[in-house]
Image (tube, rainbow, N blue to C red; front, side):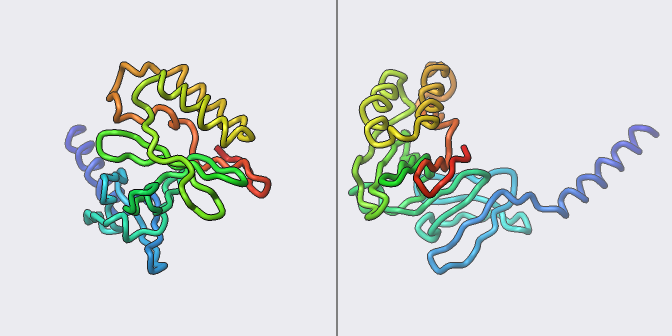
Length: 195
């Protein structure tokens, strides 16, 4: 009897949960429409964003159809990948008055880009990251510190991620190690830092 009652309660709870969609984020299309994203996760491949609509129907949308996307604290912009010409959603890692740092998962590797904030022209193109500790440390010291020296807290968070993560464990090259603890950080004169 207890098992039957427990099963009935679980079924009722499941039905109640199914009636309340889990909102994960939203996107703004190139036409200015809002696309609400539900489900248990939003996944991105090289060309598509996958999520559920409010009825839990699976949706696979081309990244080129979205101007920007927001999930949790993360803000993605659709912009040309460096000088390649393809437009893809890139997560904003940080920005200051002059530069914008984004990250993108392109195939089997993570890449970062630095853009001039006023012109959105690439300043640094297609730098691989999160593959080796030595490479990430070099990128931090020689590239990021040069363009984002005023973002002291953000650089410290990146340094901590590099120094405290075992690059040999997990899914080498798949896990985003370098920027895992920072997203949408704004250290410009007009912005305020949240993460």
